[in-house]
Image (cartoon, rainbow, N blue to C red; front, side, top):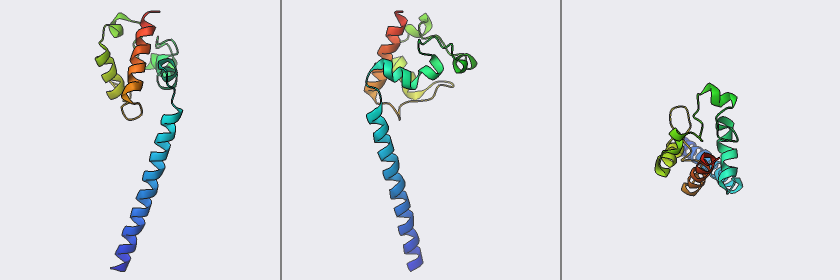
Length: 117
């Protein structure tokens, strides 16, 4: 019985260590995240969508990513764009676990600005 108690204690300590480590890492990443739409876009989206949103990056062309300036993208409502960013779509990853709702709103506003260019 004592061996079982020691094993449970060891598992609890390991779990607690990983919980604290991942929580600390998550908080640190949130504190270092950009606070404006352009900065968030550069950090989270530009790798595929390109710095101008045209999707003309190697990854964007490989995945056939839509140009964010296009009428097809710009006609979507803010709610639809927010949902797509949060939940992902097709090969686009979901960002609901790494971005807060306010950050997603900043990204949507930045996408709207790209549509004006």
